[in-house]
Length: 254
Image (cartoon, rainbow, N blue to C red; front, side, top):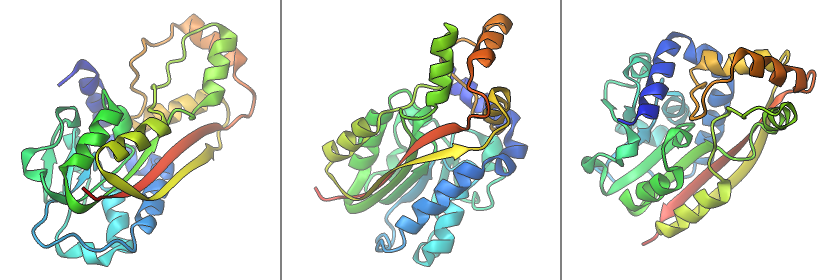
């Protein structure tokens, strides 16, 4: 496991007990992605199916509501953080796994792979997305939601104005992910790039919300107290933090 993967797992483990209560955006995105999957045919009987980076099971729970055909064989709940899996009501079928290693061998020939708010934590998101697509059987489906590079413009602008590093997690670009899906032989059925703003009571509240969710890990060193004060002074007052999220549903055709 990479050092960054260890930091990510530790951050989510520390806040696992509060994750569902804090994850309003993640829950809403999972619900929306599941609705996009309502018309998908059920995977062939016996074909592997998995929720990659399942965490507390927000996406799999939404899929069970919107796609009753999936209830006959629950998705494997695969995640780096066992503390989140412990809070996943669907995790009787679970596996602790670092997705930077690729996929477990027994997911080859998968009929359905889904993932929400997990791909961005990997070392090479586009490469891993292509791997996921190639792991599908012909006719298999991939459904993914992931925050992308257009997120957090307020944070980046404030950091630039303050002359301090932006410690937001570097997010994958939506076009690179779409190209990776195509390279894996996937034909896109639905592709949405959505923007969401989370109301906040200022910069410090926005940053604390990410921390309390467990999503505060970054590859950039933390700001010093002096740098943080400069950042907060340059953050636009009463500005909501904006997320850009890619939702992608695609089928392997070759």
